[in-house]
Length: 480
Image (cartoon, rainbow, N blue to C red; front, side):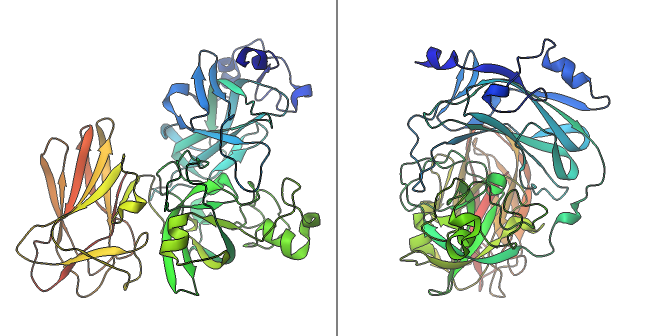
């Protein structure tokens, strides 16, 4: 069947033609490298197809990277076509760029398509939203930077047949006129109707396999979709009826629409530019009859939802029993968000992927929510004493790497001013002990330092051994 499907493909090169199947041009006679050389002064590079990460339906073959989502669990909204994402490692360029032009050699059948997403890291370490090249045009980044990341979005037809990518080449240029001034001084926040996602056993848009009592959210645009296990795009959700809040990452796309970044201003918003900022298209369609009362795919929304919430966040962290209105803060819309992509290990193992990290407690640690600013559903605290009895955050690295460790806590006058974080590598070598003042800098990621770690299970321990009469707080750590 695979060879029969491939026989319907036509070869194309982005920058030559990206129209529908009937308008596709034959591949140019000159190789892609010649097309890249045509732009004088541009930085050119090739992404290695075997180096990225994606969902299980993205298959590497001798023909290239192929998307065949025959067995994907589909969302309740009933999308007829599915999109598979394949993310390449971040790349540091020789000099800053603010424009990236993709040139893709691929095969695709009518009804399938390929898009390219690009983002840039700021000097503070935070990523921009993904900028999307939907027709092969150059991607204009929100600011200039020398560290960029590329992601492919492969769209299959309703029969589960997707495109095959043979080569991914890009060129970056500095056109000027972009600055980091597009960032807001405070994160954007809106009141949004929320629905429960569920779908345990399914796979999110970023490749995460949904487990029972999971913790993440879905937004109807992949512009703010974090990498699998990543925290670069997070929301703070509060439910007024229970007075509970939770902070969690965006790991899926939905509900209803897939190109509705409603939190952005109309000048940036990908679709529905006439709607007020902060109003999801599904809400406008459901309440006001906008777009004839239909969503992006011509369906009539059954509710005005602009966010889906996974079971653990929905039921446990927020105490919700049914779909309802919540207050959402989009934390990445200001420089105060998570500084970089990383593995986050929460104090609650229900929120952790045990293959990547987990927490282990010795002695008496108590869960609490009384002080605001905690990550996830709560934080842990323990009284200081002349004993170690640590909270140990374990994290796994498949290969040796240099990593920065961030820690998070809630601040207060009863916290230790010298809480000891002990960094130990997988060989058992104590790399450092970092004493931090937990009376300040609460509710944010604080860098402990950068060290070289071997492959295997490394750890960060928060010890209780500090001046008596205080508490130490174990909330979460991030490895990036």
